[in-house]
Image (tube, rainbow, N blue to C red):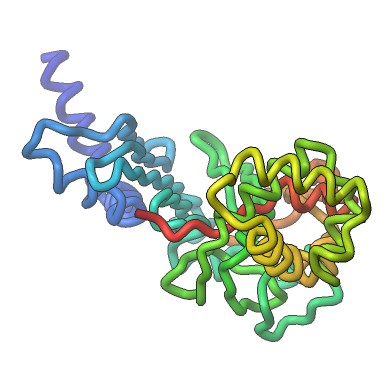
Length: 295
């Protein structure tokens, strides 16, 4: 009798509008894993908890050793309806961010003006996108600002996108100059040299900057022309400098959101939110990535 009661409880918990909504929110990633289920493969994580309003799936699948993860959460409104919010990440497709139509109904109307006050609300070249940690239990939610990769060009309201995806963008594979930049920074390339390189080209490097470039690029890229590598890096830094003029104005790097059940919307809790930590151009370069075209 006890076993039967448990089974009935599980059946009820896995059916109904909340369960259906959660399944829909993570459906695309789950479908990718289901393709390989005949080979005995299964996702590393699969959670469906309608009682907590939470679902999650994550794992790798054979194509190029790629992975996807998706999280869904259900937020109840006072009238008994629900808002289903999602977050996804596809590593090889360079896609991540918010998913689901309900985000537009629950985010504060002035969200973008809080994050980047001078950008306005019209569509313009974006510098960042929204990412989130959805709660396993409860309703408190964290919204983060992630930097749009250099080499991915998107236009979004207020220069901030809900998600990043090559399908919505024009792209250039700039992983190689990003890798060179990373090595130059670790070798001690002065920040001012990086700025002048982006603005004026390799000839503008200081004596120290030239010496570091010779050491780093000749050692790690012996089969490549150093001047060519520096010119590619100049193009990368030129884009980064233009974006930095907007990134430096970001008021927040992380927003704490409280759920207002009566209104069915999120409200910003500024006391628990975090101001932007990107104070210098070098700070920005150390967190932004170069777009990688995938497999």
